[in-house]
Length: 113
Length: 113
Image: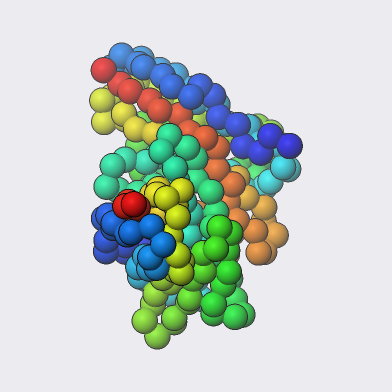
Protein backbone atom coordinates (compact mmCIF):
# COMPACT_ATOMS: atom_id res chain seq x y z
CA UNK A 1 0.00 0.00 0.00
CA UNK A 2 1.09 3.52 -0.66
CA UNK A 3 2.17 5.64 2.25
CA UNK A 4 3.81 8.99 2.88
CA UNK A 5 5.82 9.97 5.93
CA UNK A 6 6.53 13.51 6.96
CA UNK A 7 8.66 13.04 10.07
CA UNK A 8 8.54 16.63 11.27
CA UNK A 9 5.22 17.74 12.77
CA UNK A 10 6.38 21.34 12.99
CA UNK A 11 9.50 23.30 12.12
CA UNK A 12 10.54 26.81 13.10
CA UNK A 13 12.84 28.71 10.76
CA UNK A 14 14.16 32.24 11.00
CA UNK A 15 13.13 34.59 8.24
CA UNK A 16 15.81 34.57 5.55
CA UNK A 17 17.14 31.16 6.52
CA UNK A 18 16.98 28.11 4.29
CA UNK A 19 14.30 25.46 4.62
CA UNK A 20 14.08 21.75 3.99
CA UNK A 21 10.94 19.75 4.66
CA UNK A 22 11.30 16.01 4.56
CA UNK A 23 9.06 13.54 2.78
CA UNK A 24 9.51 9.79 2.39
CA UNK A 25 7.12 7.63 0.43
CA UNK A 26 6.34 3.98 -0.10
CA UNK A 27 5.06 3.04 -3.52
CA UNK A 28 5.42 0.00 -5.73
CA UNK A 29 6.06 1.72 -9.04
CA UNK A 30 7.30 5.09 -10.19
CA UNK A 31 5.37 7.52 -8.04
CA UNK A 32 3.65 10.74 -8.92
CA UNK A 33 4.70 13.13 -6.15
CA UNK A 34 3.27 16.43 -5.04
CA UNK A 35 3.81 19.14 -2.48
CA UNK A 36 0.80 21.20 -1.43
CA UNK A 37 0.64 24.19 0.90
CA UNK A 38 -2.31 25.13 3.09
CA UNK A 39 -2.67 28.51 4.74
CA UNK A 40 -4.95 28.70 7.79
CA UNK A 41 -8.61 28.29 6.86
CA UNK A 42 -7.78 27.80 3.20
CA UNK A 43 -7.75 24.99 0.70
CA UNK A 44 -4.67 23.32 -0.70
CA UNK A 45 -2.47 24.96 -3.29
CA UNK A 46 -0.06 22.97 -5.40
CA UNK A 47 3.57 24.02 -4.99
CA UNK A 48 5.16 21.54 -7.37
CA UNK A 49 4.87 18.07 -8.80
CA UNK A 50 7.07 15.28 -10.10
CA UNK A 51 5.94 12.81 -12.71
CA UNK A 52 9.11 11.86 -14.58
CA UNK A 53 12.28 13.30 -16.06
CA UNK A 54 14.52 15.75 -14.24
CA UNK A 55 14.63 14.80 -10.58
CA UNK A 56 14.96 18.42 -9.44
CA UNK A 57 11.67 20.20 -9.94
CA UNK A 58 10.93 23.87 -9.55
CA UNK A 59 7.69 25.16 -8.18
CA UNK A 60 5.94 28.35 -7.32
CA UNK A 61 7.00 30.84 -4.64
CA UNK A 62 10.68 29.89 -4.99
CA UNK A 63 10.28 26.30 -3.82
CA UNK A 64 12.03 23.28 -5.30
CA UNK A 65 12.07 19.58 -4.54
CA UNK A 66 14.37 16.72 -5.42
CA UNK A 67 13.21 13.20 -6.14
CA UNK A 68 15.65 10.58 -4.90
CA UNK A 69 14.52 7.12 -5.86
CA UNK A 70 17.28 5.38 -3.88
CA UNK A 71 16.10 7.08 -0.69
CA UNK A 72 12.37 7.09 -1.52
CA UNK A 73 12.40 10.78 -0.72
CA UNK A 74 10.98 13.96 -2.16
CA UNK A 75 12.21 16.76 0.09
CA UNK A 76 11.02 20.33 -0.33
CA UNK A 77 13.52 23.17 -0.17
CA UNK A 78 13.63 26.93 -0.26
CA UNK A 79 16.87 28.94 -0.03
CA UNK A 80 15.41 31.91 1.88
CA UNK A 81 12.16 31.75 3.83
CA UNK A 82 9.74 34.68 4.00
CA UNK A 83 7.26 35.32 6.80
CA UNK A 84 4.44 34.64 4.33
CA UNK A 85 5.66 31.05 3.94
CA UNK A 86 4.28 30.18 7.37
CA UNK A 87 1.68 27.50 6.62
CA UNK A 88 1.16 23.77 6.66
CA UNK A 89 2.85 21.71 3.98
CA UNK A 90 1.67 18.37 2.72
CA UNK A 91 3.52 15.82 0.65
CA UNK A 92 1.37 13.44 -1.38
CA UNK A 93 1.80 10.47 -3.67
CA UNK A 94 -0.65 9.56 -6.41
CA UNK A 95 -1.32 6.83 -8.89
CA UNK A 96 -1.52 7.25 -12.63
CA UNK A 97 -5.09 8.47 -12.46
CA UNK A 98 -4.41 11.20 -9.88
CA UNK A 99 -7.81 10.69 -8.36
CA UNK A 100 -6.45 8.88 -5.36
CA UNK A 101 -3.86 10.84 -3.45
CA UNK A 102 -2.24 9.57 -0.28
CA UNK A 103 -1.12 12.42 1.93
CA UNK A 104 1.42 12.71 4.65
CA UNK A 105 0.35 14.08 8.01
CA UNK A 106 1.76 17.50 7.21
CA UNK A 107 4.49 19.76 8.56
CA UNK A 108 3.57 23.09 10.07
CA UNK A 109 6.14 25.77 9.29
CA UNK A 110 6.60 28.64 11.70
CA UNK A 111 8.74 31.60 10.64
CA UNK A 112 10.40 33.64 13.35
CA UNK A 113 11.50 37.25 12.81
CA UNK B 1 -13.13 30.25 -14.11
CA UNK B 2 -14.31 29.30 -10.60
CA UNK B 3 -12.44 25.98 -10.32
CA UNK B 4 -13.80 23.76 -7.55
CA UNK B 5 -16.65 25.21 -5.49
CA UNK B 6 -17.81 23.72 -2.21
CA UNK B 7 -20.91 24.65 -0.25
CA UNK B 8 -21.54 25.31 2.55
CA UNK B 9 -18.30 26.60 4.08
CA UNK B 10 -19.45 25.88 7.62
CA UNK B 11 -22.11 23.58 9.02
CA UNK B 12 -23.20 22.42 12.45
CA UNK B 13 -25.27 19.25 12.67
CA UNK B 14 -26.86 17.35 15.48
CA UNK B 15 -26.07 13.68 15.89
CA UNK B 16 -28.33 11.64 13.64
CA UNK B 17 -29.11 14.40 11.17
CA UNK B 18 -28.38 13.99 7.51
CA UNK B 19 -26.97 16.49 5.06
CA UNK B 20 -25.31 16.84 1.69
CA UNK B 21 -22.04 18.63 1.04
CA UNK B 22 -22.02 20.08 -2.44
CA UNK B 23 -19.07 20.12 -4.83
CA UNK B 24 -19.02 21.52 -8.35
CA UNK B 25 -16.21 22.02 -10.84
CA UNK B 26 -16.18 23.91 -14.10
CA UNK B 27 -12.99 22.52 -15.60
CA UNK B 28 -14.62 19.51 -17.29
CA UNK B 29 -12.45 17.19 -15.21
CA UNK B 30 -13.19 13.52 -15.32
CA UNK B 31 -11.94 12.73 -11.82
CA UNK B 32 -13.45 14.02 -8.59
CA UNK B 33 -12.69 13.06 -5.01
CA UNK B 34 -13.69 13.77 -1.44
CA UNK B 35 -11.17 13.95 1.40
CA UNK B 36 -11.49 14.64 5.08
CA UNK B 37 -8.82 16.44 7.06
CA UNK B 38 -8.31 15.77 10.73
CA UNK B 39 -5.57 17.17 12.98
CA UNK B 40 -2.40 15.12 12.84
CA UNK B 41 -3.78 12.81 10.16
CA UNK B 42 -3.41 14.74 6.94
CA UNK B 43 -6.09 14.23 4.31
CA UNK B 44 -7.76 10.87 3.83
CA UNK B 45 -9.73 9.80 0.79
CA UNK B 46 -13.43 9.11 1.39
CA UNK B 47 -14.83 8.42 -2.10
CA UNK B 48 -13.82 9.15 -5.63
CA UNK B 49 -15.25 9.10 -9.12
CA UNK B 50 -13.57 8.55 -12.49
CA UNK B 51 -16.53 9.84 -14.47
CA UNK B 52 -20.28 10.33 -14.51
CA UNK B 53 -22.04 7.27 -13.14
CA UNK B 54 -18.87 5.71 -11.69
CA UNK B 55 -17.86 5.95 -8.04
CA UNK B 56 -15.67 3.95 -5.71
CA UNK B 57 -14.63 3.87 -2.08
CA UNK B 58 -11.50 5.35 -0.68
CA UNK B 59 -9.77 4.80 2.64
CA UNK B 60 -12.56 5.99 4.99
CA UNK B 61 -15.94 5.53 3.24
CA UNK B 62 -18.13 4.41 6.16
CA UNK B 63 -21.02 6.76 6.91
CA UNK B 64 -20.81 8.55 3.57
CA UNK B 65 -22.53 8.15 0.22
CA UNK B 66 -21.74 9.71 -3.13
CA UNK B 67 -23.19 9.80 -6.61
CA UNK B 68 -22.01 11.33 -9.88
CA UNK B 69 -24.88 12.07 -12.22
CA UNK B 70 -23.03 14.81 -14.12
CA UNK B 71 -19.40 15.59 -14.87
CA UNK B 72 -19.64 18.84 -12.92
CA UNK B 73 -21.15 17.74 -9.60
CA UNK B 74 -20.06 15.29 -6.93
CA UNK B 75 -22.14 15.62 -3.74
CA UNK B 76 -21.19 13.89 -0.50
CA UNK B 77 -24.03 12.68 1.71
CA UNK B 78 -23.87 12.04 5.42
CA UNK B 79 -26.70 9.65 6.17
CA UNK B 80 -26.74 9.89 9.97
CA UNK B 81 -24.15 12.28 11.31
CA UNK B 82 -21.91 11.21 14.17
CA UNK B 83 -19.45 13.26 16.25
CA UNK B 84 -16.62 11.25 14.64
CA UNK B 85 -17.52 12.93 11.36
CA UNK B 86 -16.55 16.34 12.71
CA UNK B 87 -13.86 17.34 10.26
CA UNK B 88 -12.92 19.59 7.38
CA UNK B 89 -14.01 18.16 4.05
CA UNK B 90 -12.28 18.90 0.78
CA UNK B 91 -13.44 18.16 -2.72
CA UNK B 92 -10.89 17.83 -5.50
CA UNK B 93 -10.97 17.38 -9.24
CA UNK B 94 -8.37 16.41 -11.80
CA UNK B 95 -8.06 15.57 -15.45
CA UNK B 96 -7.32 12.08 -16.71
CA UNK B 97 -4.65 13.56 -18.96
CA UNK B 98 -1.18 12.85 -17.71
CA UNK B 99 0.81 15.61 -16.11
CA UNK B 100 -2.02 17.33 -14.30
CA UNK B 101 -2.65 17.73 -10.62
CA UNK B 102 -5.68 17.74 -8.34
CA UNK B 103 -7.40 21.07 -7.75
CA UNK B 104 -9.00 21.52 -4.36
CA UNK B 105 -12.00 23.46 -3.14
CA UNK B 106 -11.85 25.76 -0.12
CA UNK B 107 -13.28 23.15 2.20
CA UNK B 108 -16.35 22.65 4.37
CA UNK B 109 -15.89 22.73 8.14
CA UNK B 110 -18.44 20.37 9.67
CA UNK B 111 -19.17 20.07 13.37
CA UNK B 112 -21.44 17.31 14.68
CA UNK B 113 -22.71 17.87 18.21
